[in-house]
Length: 239
Image (cartoon, rainbow, N blue to C red; front, side, top):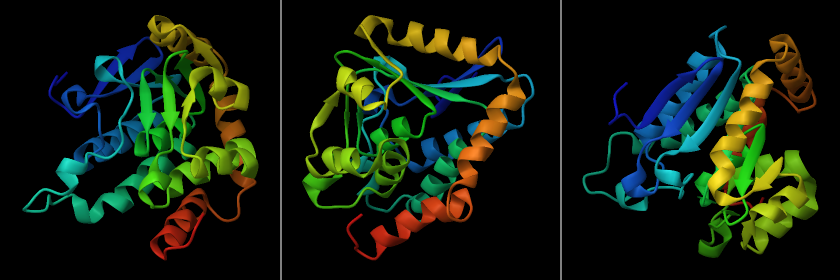
C-alpha cells in the first residue's frame, strides 16, 4: 500500500476501508483525491469479496472541504478543469454502488466534505464532531449537499442546514436522521467498523436491490438526477 497515495485502500475481511489521505491539509479535496476515491468505489462495487465500504479520513478527521489553496494555484492545476465532472462521477459511484457505504465522521465534515459525508448510506458521528454545510456563508450554492439532504431529510431540514449554515453537532445529526448513531469522539471508528462488519455479513443481493429501489424513485437516472442540481448551480439559481 502506498502511504503517500491520496486515498488508502485497506482490506479487513469483507470490510473495505477507503481513507482520505491528506491529513496535513485536513483531508481537503483536490482532483487526484476525488478521482482516486471514485475509482476505488467503482473497483469495490465490482469486487465480490467486498461486503461493505467504510469511508473515513486519516489523522482523526473526516474532510474540511475543497483545498482552496490548491484550487487557486498559479499555474492552474491540470485537474481543475475536470473537477466538477469528477465530483459528480464520485457521487454517482457512491449512489450506485451495491456495497453499503458507512461513513465515520470524526471532528468535522465541512462544505464539500459535508456532501461526501451525506453521500454515505449510513453515518456514524462523534458527539463532539460536526457537519457544516458552509457554502451559504460565502454566497455559493451547494448542489451535492442539497441533493443528498433533500433525499434524506426533506425540504425543511435542507433549508435549516443550508440557509442557516450552522455547525450541526453529532447528536443533532442523529435527531435529524442523518446519522445512525452519535458516540463519544474516541469511539467513532470502532462503532463505524462494527456497523460495517455487521452489514458485510448480510445477504449482498438485498443491499443491491435496496439501492436499486431507491434509485427507481428518482426522475431519470442517478447521474441525471445529481447533474440536474449541478446545472441549476451553474446557472446561478438558488437550490
